Image 1 (cartoon, rainbow over the protein chains, first blue to last red):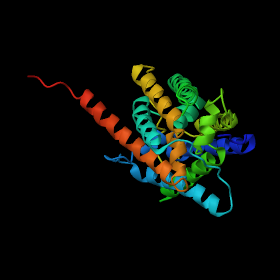
Image 2: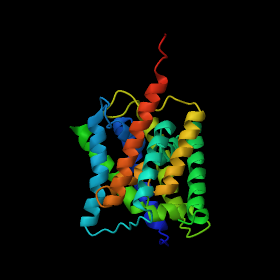
Image 3: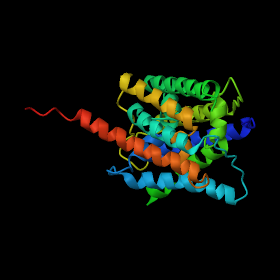
Image 4: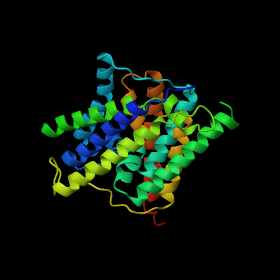
Length: 141
Length: 146
């Protein structure tokens, strides 16, 4: 499935992610990593769960408001439900042991030039690329 | 209350950024990695914009503040180890991301508009985290003396 190249919207979105990461550090002193923030509200809750719930609520509500205000969010899932479930399960196990994902390691950790986050990011980018190649061009799904 | 309101707004900025950038759109994410097929390089601009902004922002924050506004100290990761746990976990995450096209930060902001697909992914991801955490808990318990 083809998607449209959107350098400006993607750049603008990236800058917003960076502003959010900066503000979360300035206000709460926290890394804006979705894995870390989310894991704190999967029982047993961490003691500082309220700000995590507020952050997640904001992240869910903002795109809905943007859509209601007439904004467009292109969205298509060219993956069957069983594979989405399998992928989700694997992602959950991976980000737990890897202690982070694209936001925590890929953005916040890399921005701090953390060798650990750079190693993690390079590793998952390579494995994501390999997996997409195998799924699309070897298995032909 | 101020901390909660700030967290809500900061989360909203994050979610809007993810949504308009294309990170919440599996078709676009998978195409970024599909260099041999329907390649869409847009996500380079997401990562570039996010990284540069965060790097500049962190410099400002750490240069000007001794502590964050709503906490006694900055909570920076203390684990510096590049070990099997980190690399195997990251590789596993990559495999799942390549299968589904959603990463955690891409999935959560799509929950409000993405319908059943993102709900199935997110539910499975939470189960994966719970499974991994309980496995890890079993492994790390000290062996019982017989």
